[in-house]
Length: 480
Image (cartoon, helix red, strand yellow):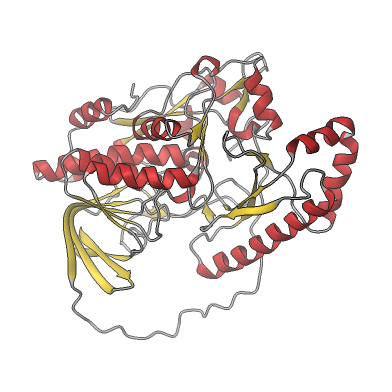
């Protein structure tokens, strides 16, 4: 069972019960065979334009492969933009050692140049007794920015926050600059198979049902949409009440007078506790974090987590979206009524897509499990090194975790890579390492590997690690 360290949220919401109306599936209809027009052919098809998908498409295209990126929404970024989970955490470990570079670092730097990102300066990573510790604690951001070191002192982590709207534009720019083709408003429904080989995908759009053919497909859907119906080994176990067994329902309130809020809170903290309690009693959920971007003064973020073990069930998603929105508006109404500083506030933005945290995963050529959390040596095919910051004393002993290329390779199928939270891992490993920056690392490696396989006419599982490693390092990845 995953155990989080001090100061990190470790008690999450349990799954919810409600009346289900979906039939048992015993009644079926026949779908007749039909011809589907092929509208594109490519070397590499990337399915899903979230963090892993954009990294995959950019690096496949930069490596010389004809690449198409397919995304169901009208924007890229997935959870980092549409889900309003705009915090990119754990980029360096507790000791201040930078672990995640490559595509992730490039994106942060490009956004920073446009005033679309903020993060603590490098000289304070892993350090305590500074203004940044105080800043992030005051913002209710301990979970993402502050940890205890060996001396039980609060120290700062390298975590970045990005502006979702600027990020949407910058991600488009990166994909198109790389030479990849972008297909938005396109929903992939199934893989096209020839024996045990994935040859492309079937998509649905406003223009109808279409087919796209490719030599390598990369599943970056997060939910494992491509692998769902394949006859391969996979797992969907999630422990109820864990981090990955949660939906996120996020909204932002702006127009908040935080100076007034602080004045009352500093003068009479007990009164503020009573206000929070009253709002809770009346059905609100008023706990908030302060927006950290300099150009978003008076903005606060409310990030509710709602327990779920079925994060691809449309009935459950509908129920939770309706319930989440109802609670969000009620919370704002109560804060506006009772909480000092919120009198002239309004809801600025709510997440256009539910925040999903876990779900279907492959059992690949290597299956990462809880024992790998204690691993001290890299794999012979390591494609990513992650900062292990969330396991308390264990993170102080083992501050880094390693991921092999084989964890992106599903067994029993050719022409397919998985570069999202559906990577090969058990619940315990996924609990800590399926976040936005981790998926960017998976995508970075998968994009390069797919291009190498196409150019050399080999299977993705036969890509030589030495060549993959060299190209990862050339493009900024941080490897052992």
